[in-house]
Length: 159
Image 1 (cartoon, one colour):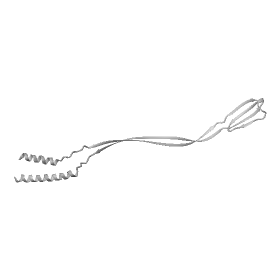
Image 2 (cartoon, rainbow, N blue to C red):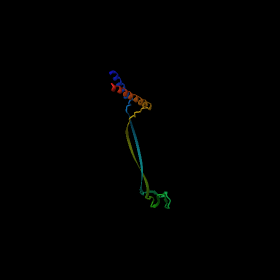
Image 3 (tube, one colour):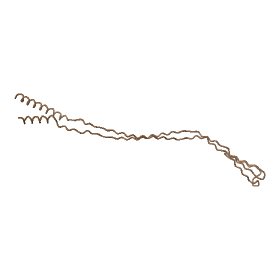
Image 4 (cartoon, rainbow, N blue to C red):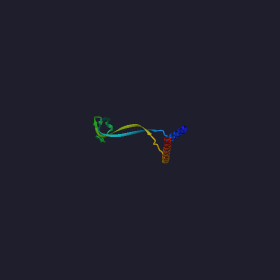
């Protein structure tokens, strides 16, 4: 009778323990790299005045080669005059000074760069999933096991 009781206890322990398998915890590492560039362009205007300085040129030519009347010639910025001076002719060329107003545009480029590296560690803990059919079979088996325990308990108490 002792071996019979040991077999019942072992059978009862196997029925209660179940046969579910456990899955290992899954983890995933994810690395995200973000590279950003920002370019900013600024324009600055500045007023500038440029002066062109006047200049004078003088040429002496023998009088025989030039007519006797004085000659004046005017161009855009210069004035040329020919005059008689004794046996020579004096040619004088004058360049007026010139002032120009300029508006200059300066360009300034500013560039900024960011490099971001982000690591994420995701841990997935699986849920224990038992199908409904297995649950019903376990409930029926548990009821049967309870009834067996009660029957053997009453038999054991009566002795």
